[in-house]
Length: 466
Image 1: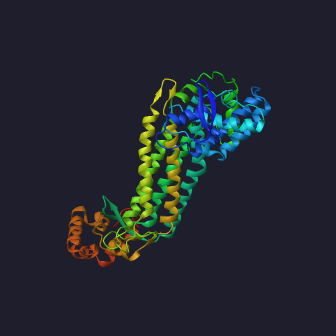
Image 2: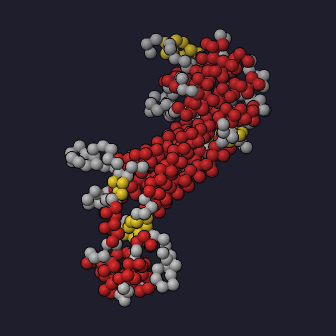
Image 3: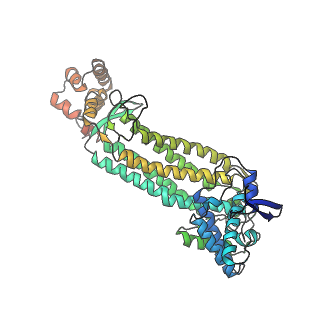
């Protein structure tokens, strides 16, 4: 440490970089946990700043903190929330399980800034942390950060993706293609029907996330050390939640039970599960796009994704489905993060969960990754792909499974025999059916019209189909 100053805490003296805004407890954590290089994320730092500003305002209102100090703490905290001091948060994610080191990091940085502005000493514990504990502040920060990121980034990204898919579906409504089950030819459907399924998955994912938000909006702040609220004013929790709700435009409320709010992270685990479900949906869509784009000659070749970059360092002219591949990797990461959060979530020993920093890191990273992946999938894959209608029509014409439409007319067994012959002889099923049934060419054309079959119902005399 080239240039240093001496800071003191309850354990004694510590050398701190001369220009650092943090103090002794932060430096101890930096020295103790040189593990990953992963630091507190921007959303969590933002949440800590908002919490400290709101707590100072409430404590001033309750006449527990003098006005000048409170004003200085609020100003410094809002600077932290705005991202002006992110470099002053050096503590590794893998630290004390309560996140005490990160809470004290925030307290010390804010106290340093506030002391400078107020011209008098602002203490990180006695003033900035007044009425709070790491044990309620860090769970609150996780909830606040997750709610804000979900509302401001992921949900808008999902809404945009669903609209992109629906616009593309509308443009392709007249194009009928071969359906596939088990990766094998099946009855036809339209592109708008297939893409409509994707849009429905995305909208359902958004609905699941929205359904979990009310539980994340319940805050642990006010429970302090073990859930009893020791050292916090009895009115602190309610006033804090109301003021933070107004500041953020979110209906935050005190947790109905502080003991549960400190000892468990069930709401975060629940939301992680919803993110995992969304990741599964996005991976399904990404892989559908990859299959549809496969080829261009030896694969399905139904669509052409936008060509974004060369696909090989050795094979000239190769272009790969890079956006769906990147999205699939994001989804794999989110699914893995859910396992991590699940294990961390059960680490609530008695009155405190002791994997809080890890839960916050993984949950917020998953939110950010999914939001960006959704934007890229919509803008760089779905919006610009083109359908090779000639290839789609050629495959559809040879699809022997179209014979399914004649089940009500000729029966399953005869239909199976015709389908197998058509496949064996590489002939259109309508030609084989013309030879093997009593139906005329006109009747078969009507009954086997792929577009009509996409409307469902029963084909044939007295049927309900198209």
